[in-house]
Length: 74
Image 1 (tube, rainbow, N blue to C red):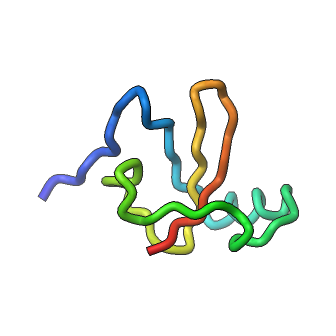
Image 2 (image 1 turned 180 degrees about the horizontal axis):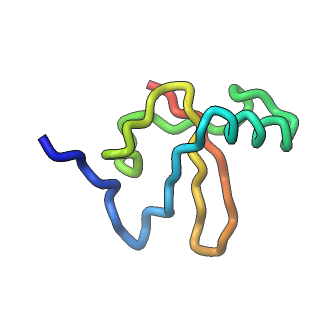
């Protein structure tokens, strides 16, 4: 079965799964715990085909270049 690609649509900002080390570095940089950042469900349409698992951190890059981070939950 071929792997699904993340949907491409002008209203869906770019989503990128961070490595464990990168995620920890972001949490350290902003001095927050993983439970203090906003959540995103693993079945969210923007994560289709990415293989996101609960506990991972996703970087969301908006059209204006701003970056936000989300904790993947079930």
